[in-house]
Image (cartoon, rainbow, N blue to C red):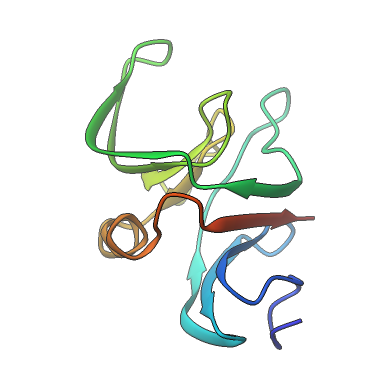
Length: 119
């Protein structure tokens, strides 16, 4: 565990839903964060567990929610991603980040890196 994160991974991204925070860790050290987030609202909860970064799309668009998703870094097959978004309005499952953080996560997480989501 990389203190003070609640995650057990030593490399990748850690998300703590209860505190609305995320970190990037490398070699058991925090390299970015804690960063504020919003996550899935009731009925659209962000899933818990360990997931690999699957793909990245710089200027994505959500068709179901008719919303821009800049700097999308996807980590579930169902389409959950880190992306630029509101830090006051809960998402439909994605992890919203402020613009500089969304760009940092996009540029510093690689395909296959682990994303760990804990409550």
